[in-house]
Amino acid sequence: MLYVLVFAAVLLFVLHVVFLLISFKNGALLTRRYFYSHLTLWLTGGCVFLLALFYSGHGISGFLDYFNTAIKLGMILLFTFALSLVAHLIVSRIVLPLMRK
Image (tube, rainbow, N blue to C red; front, side, top):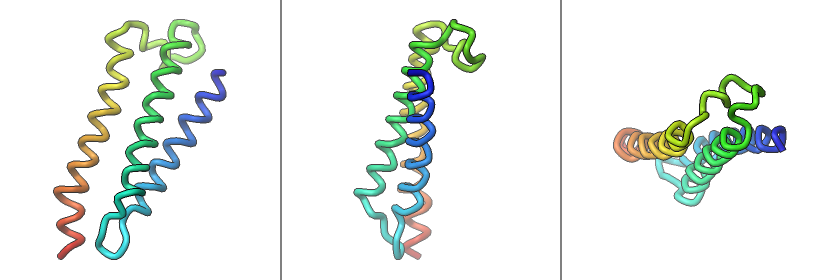
């Protein structure tokens, strides 16, 4: 299960980057691909959350062992949400206006 979640997290993050890069075409934002970019980012955060939930404190990974409290686990989801929000604001407030010019 550990390797399945790690593989899923890596694959979803790669898909996130790919969807983000192909979301822009001819100065326009392709909304469906852009949504899939955010969705794959959220699913990546979910995979990391599950990894930390199941494997923190087992000595498998120093990174996962850090998330040994409920607050630290919640920070994974909060960070994922904040990253998605910041990325969306950058795209909507900076990238798209620059592409329109």
